[in-house]
Amino acid sequence: MAHAFADWLHCRTDTPLGPLTLARTPSGLCGAWFDDQRDAPAAACFLSDQHRPQDELLRTASEQLRAYFMGQLRHFDLPLDLEAGTAFQQSVWRGMQQLAWGQLGTYAALAQRINRPRAVRAVGGAVGRNPLSIVLPCHRVLGSTGQLTGYSGGLWRKQALLRLEGHSLF
Image 1 (cartoon, rainbow, N blue to C red):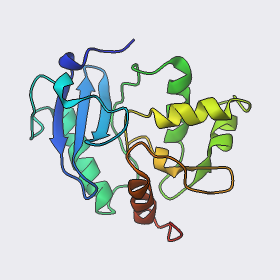
Image 2: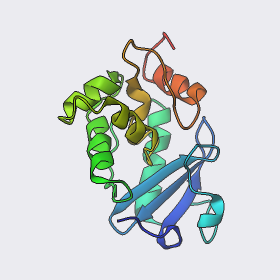
Image 3: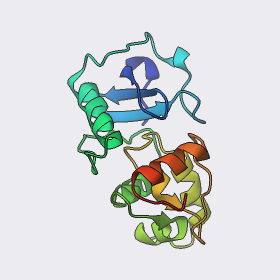
Image 4: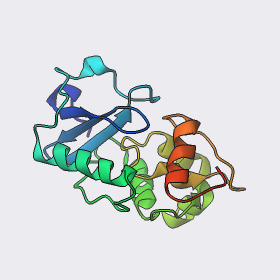
């Protein structure tokens, strides 16, 4: 199931919203965390602090994130490793991938999408444990009445990401 942090290749990349640590396993990208993000692995989990991506996948992920923030990329095309999550969490994370650039959804709609309409709270928990900030667009998931709700990277980042995608109400 979960891989040992020390086995992950990783790097740090700068974004307009703060530095992200990107991590990968042999299967794909498995992490993208802001430094102060809730549930992010502590920096001590990684053997060294690589500031430049030495790995092709990490370099591609970093380039795609840069293009996203410049408004030039609307869909990430990266192999992902979601094995750190439970089967339920993985289904929620895959469901989030279906929310296109600029499209908003709710926790209830996401629960419907994964055929678990009564699991809205559990869906919220899985969204909150998303290990791939921005790449898996949990920032596009809102509360039932369209209100901004928690974002493990901080609500200010969620607002900024939604503004970047053309939502002026946030």
